[in-house]
Length: 530
Image 1 (spheres, rainbow, N blue to C red):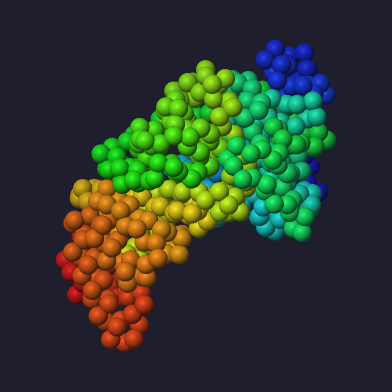
Image 2: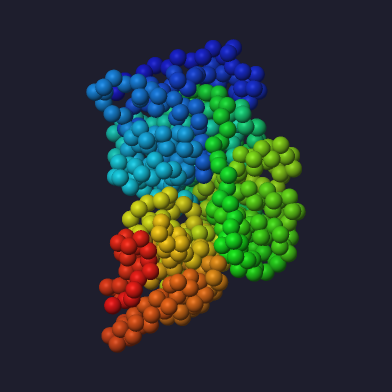
């Protein structure tokens, strides 16, 4: 029999004035607790869901004290590990710390952090990435809890720990600067802990929350414009499942956005050749995405609409330029300075953007209906337009698939942008981002319309594989690799045509020679194909 330690609640009279102002359901004040008192409640092999997306809106109090509790165990105490579910990534001070202390058994579906990446690639953490539009529904279906050994068999998760900026009279919560998979995590959890963050402003009105149904009762998303609302401003919560309320006072631990550079600006110039009248835009994260959005803010565009996954700092500039009319996403990932500006000017922005759950923000149904222009960054693209976004050299997991494929497969125009090369320790152009054969495939040749590097733009729409390859090489490859890639394609074409297999020519014996040469010599610059 599994015994759960008892919980000592804090007297409601000790609640801060700020916390009392945020909690409109008086009964919840009787459930106030200190984060340290909750640490013993979690047991080995628990399935735990956290709110959060791209390092924003994650719980900061309870996950921070749990490692301290684990560190207090006597030598010989049974090691405790947990199965962790978050819409995407969360703050390094919680997730990376759990990974460093070897507290994570399983992790889904996306992560960012040196320690958790190390744990995954050393085989200590079982990780599986997933299209971010599909993760919440698969969680509700129970796909991730098939090996769950204790707790309510009808609930995929033992616990949900979620951050809120306010609690409504009905017990529902107003999230912070992200929604992610929080609605489905709450729906799936046996017990719920709510961290009310009084450091962050009350963001009531920023969100559009809809309930997640399972087949055959799923409903269409009745959205035809980025500003359309289909839900409520708060996430429903069953008060009977709320175990504790904790006050949190820590900000989201974001870092400055990746800076623009000459390479990213050159890529942005090519992408910026879009018509003045734009369909809704989606942009990934990183310095190239920043440069593109910054370029649009300075360009001849107006009344721009954005339907995307994450908003970065350059979107503030886009708003302030007057050219961005409305934006919707599932997360706002600003730098600390960006958040300060955003919160100080909340009244200016609050009617111009909307946060939704990732199941809606990344919905293929809506992306296709709105005709999104999608722009994302891969690790590498091969000469036929297969793209690798996740596994360096085919094996080393970086962060996970994320939502790029949700958009690229369903957008009206699917663009992948990347530098043509990246530096290694001993070669400033030692890695070619245009390769003969992608070492891992996340987005297929059927998903991409345009490939862009600082060298140029390859428009692949309507082209056969044999038409695509020379164009990608000529327009996108770095000059240090262009001749090698042309030779690879021409020799492959000759050999495959001779045996009647010329649709998408390859020399399989040499297809990964760039990669194997890098492993052996620290550069992809090979001496030849013989």
